[in-house]
Amino acid sequence: MSAQIAFLRAVNVGGKAKLPMADLRALAEGLKLRKVSTLLQSGNLVFEASAKPAATERLLEAACAKTFGLETGIFVRTLSEIEEVIACNPFVKEAKNDPGHLVVLVTRDTPDAASLRALQAAIKGREVVRGGVRHAYITYPDGIGASKLSLAMIERRLGTTGTMRNWNTILKLAAKAAS
Image (cartoon, rainbow, N blue to C red; front, side, top):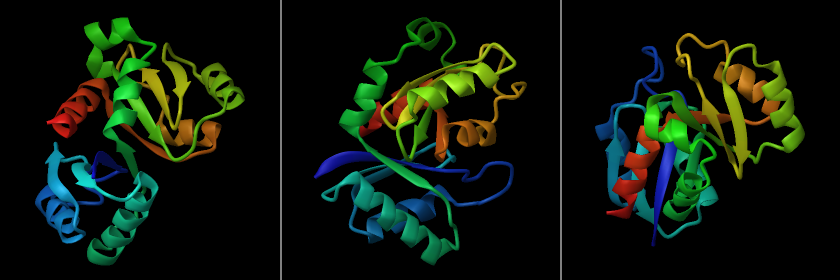
């Protein structure tokens, strides 16, 4: 069994794709995932599983579609992968001083260097993007809500799907998975 974290895309955002976290926990427990818990209402699921993350993604996506009629991307990472994301953060100062405006974009595929450069070049504001393995780090120094750098734009430029969590949430999920 390994500690894993599932990031559900676009759940309970703007009144759409409503999914009570108690229902998500019950679904996960019914799938024989262990030590199941959630964090916040935005689709963060922490659990232990014997399957590899890719298999857990497929299992959760199929179960959410069948049980809730919710077809959304689910991105699963092991605790060690999230610890690596934390250790390799290129924005150490932002993580310390403004963690609410630093996000991790968890992606289906690894963004290639050319796509990351193209995305950075297309940004009109002060946002900065740096890539990682199946994730990217993005700073929003002027706030996420005011930014023109939307998830849709990011996905188009990177050629992959994903979901974002702020730095505080990433740290809390890692701590929850480690306990």
